[in-house]
Image (cartoon, rainbow, N blue to C red; front, side):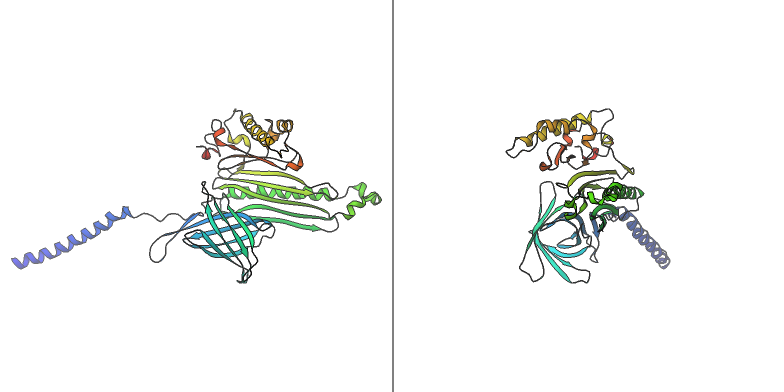
Length: 392
């Protein structure tokens, strides 16, 4: 009888052990967290050791010496930095590899397409109270003592879906008509969302139209073509005409992108160039270009509110010793009329309003920019509108 009981007990013990082990595995499953989705700004990497590190992607704009249209993309993983940079005017990417230490000292070596080192950045990485990163220092060629100052400031590009902003160009020279075209515009890549392509179409169409209009202006009228003897000798000695277009992304998120273009053109024989602003504010969530009214509660007197604030801010600038703005000019150019507020952009801290030369002051005063804080607009911002996310 004792042997029989032992034979019966052993299988029972095996079964109990199997059930316990299986139950423990099932019980532990709910505590296992899924891996975080990789984003463009913070991507999680899992090395062989199993420890997760965060790769942070940031975009910068700035300059090296007199070259003002530098764009840089940097990925930071611990003390390692990788990325690339380019000049909008040239458009060719240059690879970067380097390090950052615990004190913010940055070293970035650049390499040409053949893999040969072509320069080095050495500077300091700092962060202001708003969390915006700046990198400043000197750039030099390898084994050279000659240094050129550089300055970079983080751009508000915060896509989390892998999208990036790239520059496209329209460049041409017409020797016969003596003009040049150098235009840059942004395009979104890295996303299959059709609304992103709608933004691309909108910016491409805007700049293509500007260039086309410029070309038409350069074609001589039939009267001029038939009467060449009336041509102005001063025009023959002129360096020619040109149009230059550059852009800045002032905000880029998954659901919204706000861009500002500076269009500068010169016609041969003119006293000075002509400069003005164009904007594209695009709702990436709904795939449409925004109007200023889309930001505010229907029926609200948003133009009056914006105008009042802008006039007050512009008048403050007239109190300095070098003030070039006139009260009457300000009252007219910043009056609550929709045509005075064509050039607006959505920013994190408020609504950016750009007044072009001649609008609120003479050409010599240049463009005037006023940031209308959301605190002044919170009562009329549309609760489910594109700017509501920034109102605290």
